[in-house]
Structures are given as structure tokens and as C-alpha cells.
Length: 89
Image (cartoon, rainbow, N blue to C red; front, side):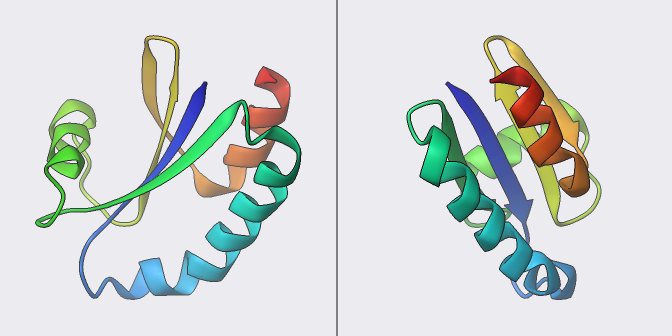
């Protein structure tokens, strides 16, 4: 399973701007690959899991996107998520 994670902060203006594109990406990928890809959103200061990624990857801005595949965890640019997924599937 490949996990795609959006790390955001409460009231993040950039997160709100990208939210429609994020939702569209999730819908498109889930239509074909829901058994292979999972999407998550974590809010810093609310979700303890978000802090794990912030510390592990030294995240300094929101939104940030993380891709997890097997034992590999890394940051990924939003615009590269779909192409990276399609190459991995």
C-alpha cells in the first residue's frame, strides 16, 4: 500500500487554496487504485501523527505532502504526486 499524506496546520491559507486540487487528485486515484493507495490528512497541533512526520522529515511549511511506500518515507511536491504514483503502480 502506498500512503499519500497531507500535513497541514489549522487555518492555513495555502492549504485552503490547494484543497480542491487535493480532493480532485484523491477522487481520480481512488477510482482506479483504491486497493493500492490511501490518502490521509493530518493537522499539526491536533493530530499526534502529524508531529511524527514533522519531526522525521523536518517539515517547515504547510501544506506538505509525504509519500510512504514500503519502508521509504519522503516529502513530495504536490505536482509530482500523481506521476510518482503512476510510475510506482
